[in-house]
Amino acid sequence: MAADRLLEEWQIYNRQLQCIGTRRREETLAPGEYHLVVNAFIFNAGGQVLLQQRSPNKLYFPSYWDSSVGGSVQAGETIATAMHREIAEEIGWDIPVKAADNYLLAPHSHWISAWFAFQTDHAATDFTVQHDELQRVAFFDQPAAHAQLHQIGFDPYTAELDRAWDHLQLVNAHQD
View 1: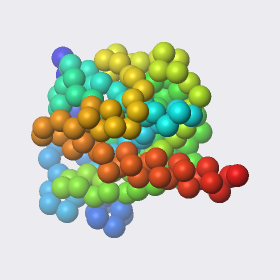
View 2: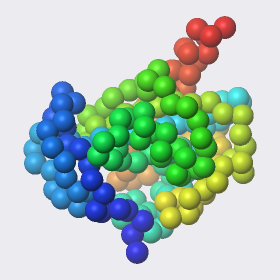
View 3: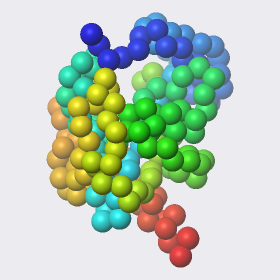
């Protein structure tokens, strides 16, 4: 049984992020139509990044290492609401999500990714892994994370990882 929810409803957007309708996940999008996806990298105080290993039951890229958390924005959600839900669902962490946590919107062929960056004091064992979606989570230093994420046929997100780290450094510098 695939871990993906093919009947969930998505809002569909044009490239300017204007909502133009809704579709079920299982339905094909026409050229110029996009659904929204949220992803996050979560760093600890030592600069290590939390990665998830996807469930072997995922429809796409089963057992691959991926960003800390991520998933589709469901109909009626904002990207911040969806990011909060995905963090809570996948790793059991209830953290407020602010617009300032979003550091990048990246269009792809039929989806637009909203990337977020967070910092935590939690150890990997403190998170409650949702085993329908993930096998496990672990912290990696950034070179090891780059190696884990580099898999044939799957976007390694290494540029997004580096930008997430840079974003957190900038945010932390402004708080000092």
